[in-house]
Amino acid sequence: MSPTSPEIPRRVFLQRLVIGSLSTALVCNASSQEVLARGAFVPREGNGVNESIREYAFVIDVEKCIGCGKCVVACKEENQVPDEVTRTWVERYVATNAGIYVDSPKAAIDGFPEEAPAEVVAGAKWAAFVPKLCNHCKEPPCVQVCPVGATFRSPDGFVLVDPEHCIACGYCVQGCPYGARFINPVRRIADKCTWCYHRIIKGLLPACVTVCPTGARQFGSLNDPKSPAAKVFAADNYSVLKPNMHTRSMCFYLNLPREVI
Image (cartoon, rainbow, N blue to C red):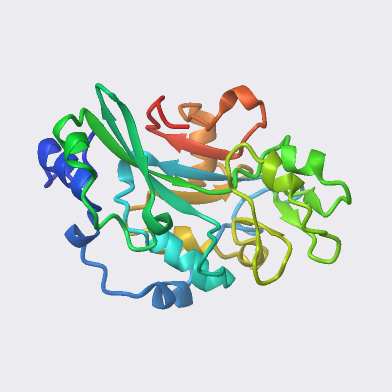
């Protein structure tokens, strides 16, 4: 895989990726709150976008992710996610002849400050940071197993939880093949990433997208041919997690190693 920046040689990039995240290699002066306050907008009416039937998608470019964890921090701040759970996280994959090493300390909220085990570092063939979150599937298993209809898919494609009807039975948590759901220990209901639905309906981007320093996370409407999501969809060069599950995931990955699960 190619490095995120042309100034970082491939060998040095791989070494840093295995040892820890590249967050120290980038200078990001603005805090996540400052960036969120500035805001960024999803194109809406008046920009040549057909809003009659909206459809959104999330794009993650694995080659651009540096494992800094700013996305995790922004998500928790924006959505008041308790410390012991997370709506989004980043995994570090390191391939060796012995197999694939995967870790995600504290969901990568502090990046990856710890060095991978010595035997993993010594035998590393390639490594990658892989962000994960709810895939907002077109055929969501979580919706199918909910006994009270609290989990549903909105007309514009967002898989959401109705807090007034959720009974916290946990069926949806077990039914999600991506491990994206949990029972919120404070609210006592099923919880997960909503792609910041409350921001999208105001024309804003998801919090994690707004603070990503490398553009590894992008979001947009498939109705807008100029959006990053529509361009990726049209190029048809993306991958999805667990394609054998036939969930019709709306989370599109670029440069995703086939070993990632």
